Length: 476
Ligand code: BG6
Image (cartoon, rainbow, N blue to C red; front, top):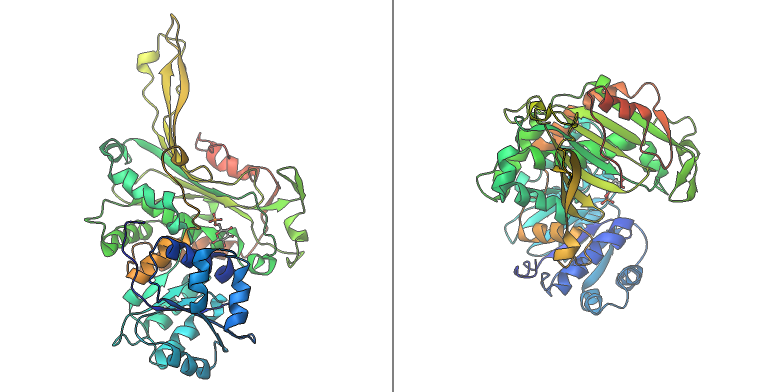
């Protein structure tokens, strides 16, 4: 990134200036951009929130997160504060006085404000691009189901054009996620076997050891499926499943990814498992049952784990299931994609002691310990033909300097430079919700199966694999 030019100067407006996202991720990421000379020194940061305060108060609030940093000291004087209610036209009239030329409007607010803020920005003429670009960044969750996502897209697109809208999926800011495309399309040997002739199935896992922590209120209304699947996991699936785009141009890539998401058949509830953590131990520490967590309804039916079998009906993937799993309070933090290849015909080995060969697997490790490994079979030394599985391992940190970035740097730089590649287009968002809608409907009823905190999830998730003579890749 450091060889890239600095982004154009702009006013960076953050709705939700005192929130966790702003303090923990957005401002530190902007400071990291400044450190790499990727932020124009004239960039103004304007935080809006309904709390009393002034410029200095906001700066002090941010100090704790980027303290004692020479770059922060350069950015700090450019931080300003505007007190205002997001639903009040007066806030937008005041904002208009601050904003001239290029501007980014970052909605780091509760999702209920997304649509109305865009409407008010539009009504105030703040989205008019006569004097410079005007772009809106929208955090997740973008809707809570297909109908609400459609309504939100319609509301937003009534005031702004699609090329002004940047729907964030922070997974796409991760370096290893971006690398999937280069690994796939930069290596002939991989692309040649990347299809239903050679691939048996794909597993996409986003396992977390953490519990829901202090997010009980949000999480209990959301659940693992909404929180992770139609956005993060489907984006990973689209990276694996897409056809080669005609260029690295944003629209070319988004079009190919959109086609994969459109080709996901609505999930069959019979092929989906939901779980909820019971009391247990994670990394040696006791964890309470989900229903005993703060701000969680003791009668909650919200799932903290989901596993699904997904079918992508394209020429390339027809017949190759994608198994997705995600959950909280699991045995380990592990985000990975496993491409499992078909077994070889055993005929050649019939006169030997080998009665089964483990399948070859390519594992793209996204976090932690980013890397790529290939599991394959070799001959065991000795006079008879026998085999052993081995692993070839590549770890990023052994070859490259991995800076202290939080993943938002790339995304914010892209917003400032107008590159929409890593942002979700309206059709992708709606396609994701359309695919999971049958499950959302079904899971209104019934309750999730319990799994002990610190385990690999509910037993039925294993059974989903065993039914097809498959097994999950181990966690961690
Ligand atoms: C967020 C979810 O979008 O992603 C969280 O709301 C989850 O529940 C997080 O913990 C995972 O992101 P990361 O980058 O920590 O893997």
